[in-house]
Image: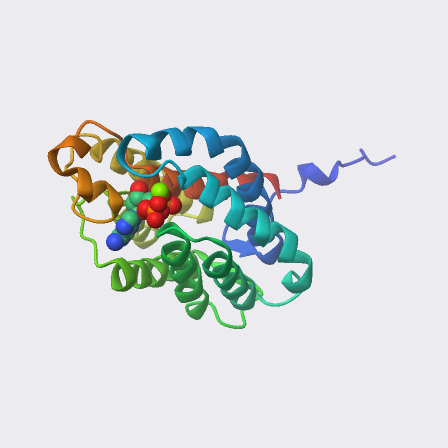
Length: 225
Ligand code: ADP
Ligand code: MG
């Protein structure tokens, strides 16, 4: 008798990101933001209006609820629908910002059923472009941009060096984590935290933190699916 093989023993193709992995990312993000809701809200209570965790949990819970209506479409459409759902369900600054990120990211992968490492990098690059156009923030202004810019740079560099998708995403996670730490001493120049002026220094930015969580959840999702 040939040895029985568990389905989990089949090596994953690490050169492709599948639709199932994207769907898993969104589902896992909904669970993750429910778990991190109190923590992100606590971070926002120091520099903002104590709702970032609530906003992210609400937005991604809505995405999770609506997923069955668009999960059998292509990746571009899945990301576009995610963006539209975030924009329509989150009142805070983060809803339109992340919503724009996903809608613009969608434009980089229109009609695709699976993504190469290059596609994944393009997706994040275009999403970041949308974020910057919408929020007009630069690195060093204590926003989600402080996590997203180094993450996208690191992903681009990893992909250019021939890294497979898990390694590309992992490079992004590590850079985002450093980016989050970099926000602590910064004085906020954008968003509600900027109303605090110098008093915003010494606190970790909530939005940079949620960007790091989104990336680390993507890393988890591609491992599990
Ligand atoms: P609100 O500030 O409306 O209460 P949230 O609390 O959900 O919205 O989100 C706050 C986060 O949004 C901040 O921690 C910051 O990272 C991010 N943010 C705010 N303004 C901008 C901007 N102009 N560009 C990029 N990110 C921003
Ligand atoms: Mg807030």
